[in-house]
Length: 498
Image (tube, one colour):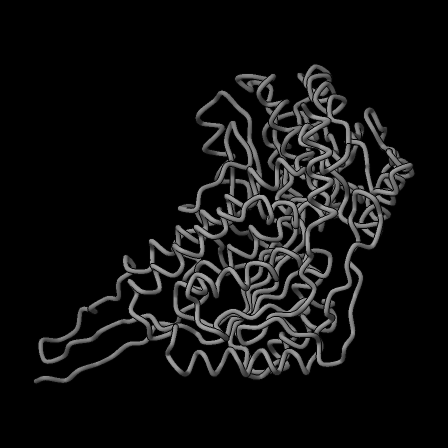
């Protein structure tokens, strides 16, 4: 059964027409320069497409299209119920094309096809539908003023939003920006990562098919230091929503100051702790969840639980349980439906992960699972789930974001040391705490400086709950109604009738 299914996905991949042109003003177009960049399938290391490399001239063209659409009111001033209908249809089309979109996602980033089709695409569709349903349920306000005045507080779209998204969850992260930005009436320029342009380009046509007016959604593939920079510096882009590394997030802050003081929302890196205390109510569940929290998507997750902070009383016993899960995960063909662990996204990222593994060893930590590149005969970029023991929190592997399947185990004596170590990082995106003591759970949730704290679970999510970080993990929130704040302005209207 699996052999047939695997063969079927490979056949479909070979027959699939890969999107390769930018999408501007409702049509697919080449970059004005004619330049392209290569897209590599991480499962084989082979180039599978050449995609338009958009430059500043293409950014200008897309911004003009977006501004024209915005000022026309064809979307920005459309009745909320009409925008709702279009976005709900857009969500439906994502689901109707789930298998194609899932295949495009896997070919771009090497994640297991089952995860793409059953996870990422439905997740993106759900996000768009959630914001569609929110459109006609977000109200303005009537402020408390004197009797001779009526003061209204209304929301207005900011204008042109540049959504710059990463390669680890390409369509899901795009939806996190598109949903609230489109729901509030903005025009959007979506800039996918150069490693993963396929789904962004494909959904542009689906948005038109759903009824979105031309120019309201433009998609510009290209290199970050060219296309992303041009969007960040553009004087007629009103807002940038960025998910990616802290390093690049700093650039967008600079671009804002160097241009029109455009609004910036940043969801950046993380080095999330998983704190397992000696009174953890179920070590088996905790171990399974800790393993999933770092090895899912081959560790290429912004909130990956990459630091295991565990009390010395249970450390050896707990690590044995984690190792059992790590050793059970074998990187394999992303197009095989039975595969649970796919590839690293690129050779560059593979080399980065292997470099950190070497630094962990040279820094004095000890590998107790994995540590190797595997399946090299495929040409793909595969790394074993890797666990380090004997890690000090000041080591590079404990302080810097690796973005790979590498877990650093750090031993602590008690609760207070665990909290100190958990907070000893420049990041503050997420954290997990495992304890059977309700008082400790509340103390830990308040003590840990992170935007999300999970207690006796990890990586749970809902569109109704905001997601984002503290410290150098960024600011602003994705998901929930709070995300709409980034893409709308409040206007106070005073009416004197005295």
